[in-house]
Image 1: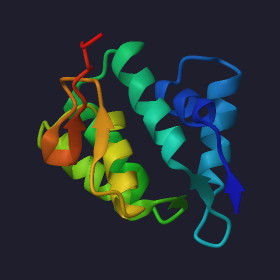
Image 2: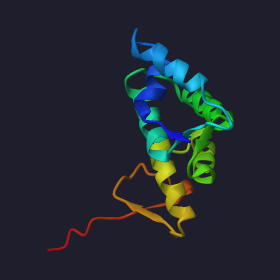
Image 3: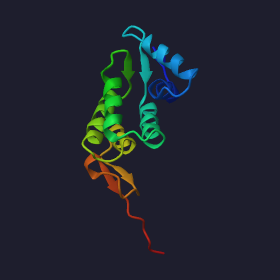
Image 4: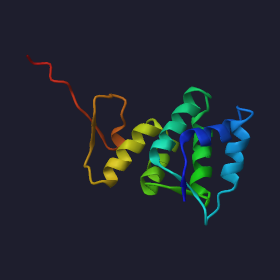
Length: 136
């Protein structure tokens, strides 16, 4: 197995660098069930962030990319069950992918909730908003 960094996936998907993109694409096409690429949750979080912010990909486009990666037997997705649960939340419009991924990984680790100051963190995914104590 070979672990891959976010930039390998990005260069292959975006096809935006005349040297790195073809090399990344060829490298990924060489992956098989017997010689897979390992993709961890941090890579997926970074991938989604860059696709949404830099490349302005829609939620549906990002969901399709993640579906393709997860369903491809040449990729081993670490923390797969948490990733699948986060993808389902994200597909349904519940929060941002990174937020729901954090909550799902924490839940899988036995956390009853994930505490955040982010008022936009979705309670449906297991977040509890921590209210700042304003008393002196």
